[in-house]
Amino acid sequence: MGGGHRLSSGLAGSCSVGTPVPAKERLSISMAQGIQLTLFEEEAAPTDKKTDTSSTFVDNMRLPVHRWFRYSAGFSATWVRSVMAREKALGRSRVLDPFSGSGTVLLEAEAEGLESQGVESHPLVGRIAQAKLLWRENPSEFLQYGLDLLREGRSVRCSSVRQYPRLLQQCFTPECLVNLDALRSTWENRSDGSPFSCLTWLALISILRDCSPVGTAQWQYILPSKSKINVEQPFEAFERKLRIMAYDMAQRQRSVHGPAAVQHIEDARVSASVPESWADLVITSPPYANNYDYADATRLEMTFLGEINSWADLQTSVRSHLVRSCTQHVAPIVKEVSHVLASSVLEPIRNEMIEVCGNLEEERKHHGGKKPYHAMIANYFLDMAAVWKRLRHSCRQGARVCFVIGDSAPYGVYVPVEKWLGDLALGAGFNSYLFEKTRDRNVKWKNRKHRVPLHEGRLWVEG
Image (cartoon, rainbow, N blue to C red; front, top):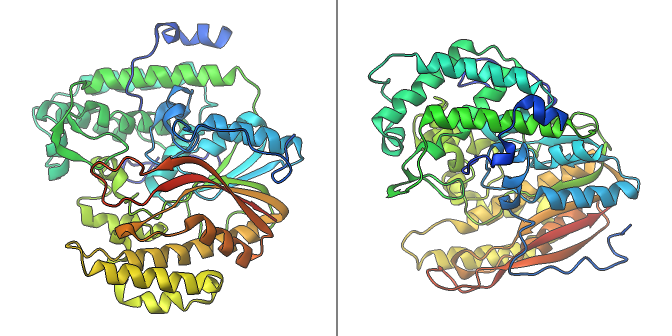
């Protein structure tokens, strides 16, 4: 499936910007259209460990196309582009992202003129990336398509909406839900799997959180009891997003770009779509082993789309496809930890894991929640070992890999994530690794559950 792939029709099965468009961007689309380093030889550029944002998505919200949907997990497109430019000069031309998320690496690879493929197992997030990759479509025609849909949605006359799940009733006013439902039903009636249909789908789901008066920021779980001041109305928010997207499409099309990226919606642990020895550069950020539920991060959107009806539905719809990085993933298999630790792929780190998982299991007894962090850590690294095995198959000899990662300390028990991932890479057949720290985490102790200093950085793997 490539950037121009047509997603299936139907809202449940198919394919944010929170700030106004600057005045200089409020141009007509026609006006917008007219207007060598090696890894181990030299030091990386110094970074401010307190202000470095290259491992976050925040800077991308100023960039065309990237800003169409704010994904809670991501990293800086500007940093990605700089890495690609350096590696391109060294002869690397094929980029793989096994955790491609909302498409940061793929979009930047296109801009840098490189071939690229992405793998994303989260079904909704993967479709968001596919829609972003449709930026090559005609912006004027897309805008007209979207405005026609908006006009039709405004004409829908209804005083109530179908019985939405309780989550949506908590997150939106009745009037807002009526208008969102009008846009939803209009889109669904028009849906034909075309690029314009997929782009307007993205415009619709990207405004949901902007239209909610409660705590729905992308970087947090849904907080119905928390209110916010700046709330948009659905019709106005939808039109604003359409114009931003059309403007961004026109802006991006003014630059020369390379081949269209290919996005696969499948599991990085078993992905079969990337050919053997295809990639010579991997840039990615796997889920962190910090108990963040990546499935729950899109619960609002998936509930609105009718893809799930409850929190429990996430287990089969999303979590079963993801690397097991939170305790919700592993609750049903807590008793299988010893079997997991005996797996042959964990041989490079088994002794260390047995000690850490044992400490976590013992510490669990002294906490009210009794969260099975020992099971989470065991299964997380089992999954990541499978990812490394798959990457060894997909990468040519001499490839370079960069993982943006963070360490972990559940219940205050430290987990040396970068060392264990590096050792698993060696076990999978890569040659060497180096960790580059970019910033400190968990250094402000107020309201923290433990006082173990943590950090974030880049694991560079050669081979």
